[in-house]
Amino acid sequence: MNKTIALLLFAAFSINCAAQKTIDRNDILATMELTNSYFMQKWPDVGKTIITNKERPSHIWTRGVYYEGLMALHEIYPKSEYYKYALDWANFHDWGFRSGNETRNADDYDAAQTYIDLYNLQPDPEKLKNTRACMQKFLHTPQNDDWDWIDAIQMGMPVFAKMGVLDKDPRYFEKMYEMYMESRNIIGGKGLYNAQDGLWWRDADFDPPYKEPNGEDSYWSRGNGWVIAALAKTLSIIPEEAPHREQYVEDLQAMAKALKKVQRPDGFWNVSLHDPTHFGGKETSGTALFVYGIAYGINNNLLDRETYLPVITKAWNAMISDSVHENGFLGWLQSTGKEPKDGQPLRYDKQPDFEDYGLGCFLLAGSEMYRLEI
Image (tube, rainbow, N blue to C red):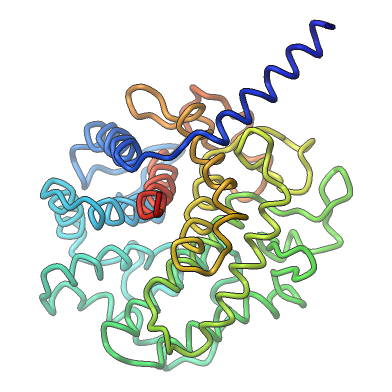
């Protein structure tokens, strides 16, 4: 047998074995604890500013996404140290937002997702004084075009869902829907969602006629990950009888179908979903968000288990074997940006500009993998 053919067959066999490797709940939890421990030990001071190209406070969106993941870990495995780490962070920032209560930027009020979770564990009206001041204005202003980049859907949508449940106020559900549908169908002229492909353009700059080098539409992995994560998280929050729920279910199902078609043989997804030649290669944050959204769909009977369980099993095993380091560091993580070229090239051992949001995505994925009926 030709040596090249033999190597290819061996690689295919290895990939297939990884895809078929069973998922063990104890292993999932152990990996979540490992990766989270790495981060908490590296950042013992919850108020320490984050310095990259400039200095930023520790409640920007990247850190907010990490705490979303931490609270998901705490939900399946409550530990006092997790609760205290999140509580200390909220207290340090006076339960407020980077740009104050007047902000309409979802990147800023993403922190409210964790503030509300902490409030629900130990209610105190002072904790949500800033959140309520920030969110109430959305109910009394007519504009719906705040989420003009798809990352914002994940940062903001679950806050509306949580507030609607907390205050028993359906106006939050309605406003959330109006803002979501503005992003979906109107922003950029025709919206940021392409129903034909079941995927989203990151913002109006990437709407057609913009194309990837191979002539395909530009669908950024992590951007689409934010959307399917937002849909899954929102569905996990709102009541079964909440208005417009079916819209979110249909969109999650369409995205899962589209994502299944473009999964890499090794289990990851490329940074550019429809152009593997444009900075092709495995990427952890988008993959983790896809696992989270699809696993949620399986766990809640929105997606066919037989069809999609192999997808997330292969993806989870790929991240465990090719992304998670022995000390808990996550490799193959694209730095902040908005398109495939940002933060390139990626490597197993490359330190991204921020590593907090990638861990948050990974912990969200692990929390739903842990819930699977195995």
